[in-house]
Image (tube, rainbow, N blue to C red; front, side, top):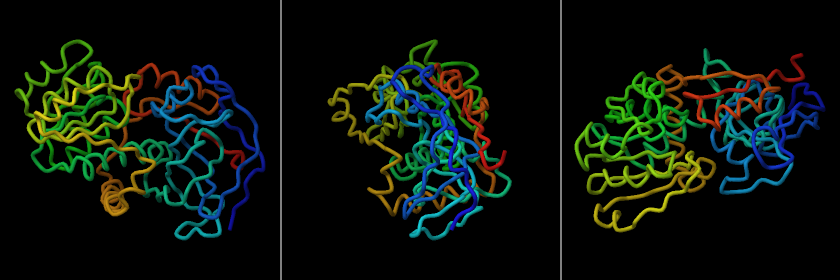
Length: 337
């Protein structure tokens, strides 16, 4: 089944690794969906920090050149594979899929979700991946309980703000750590009880001043770098530390004696493979998250919107940590011109 789609499309592509300046807007062949995939006419795509690491060649995995960056999009289904059930052409979806910075993207049907009524394409693109990653991290990996004291590092970014908002929805008390007053204000708006500016002061001392020494039950860390160890040191006995990525650009080395002395649990979460390893938890989390989303209890903060032609500028803004919340690329597909 399919709707009309243009045989050619515009796409942001990387031909050589480097900075965002290496992005070019090319006209390429529109892809076709496989048996268990959807073809989506992309209306909006969100820029995430790992996208900037991938184009710089600093991500944990390498993508063969040339490639279309981006992994988070929202749009309209134009074709479905022969094995797909539950989706038909014309459906509005949000999805996790490679190659999102283009007029069309091929999406695994398992990674797509219907977009609730009243949610714009930009909001849908800015919500699905970061919020679901944060929800998995809090609900299934850290197993946050009401009353837990949760530290969120990088709390001004898309993933960090999502973690603040969702931790509060789970009944936790949140300490938000970020690098500017604007980012900390955004975290307060999402319900953070305490804030720590780790650019202007000592993170560990800031945590202790807010809640006392060794008080944290959970750390949610999408940043890594030099902030990981002081955060770990402020866990209470048996605390849980979840590593989600390394927006600092530095993968930290952790002294294992700290884990021993604190009885701490350190876990990692990679959103693309989580459902493979914990299908029951993933299904439960997705259902609970969808209920929160569809009832309007969660909304992303969109920092800026760029057209496809300005993809390089959008990625530069995210790479330089200028964004508070999510940066979105709004795309007008060929079929709607």
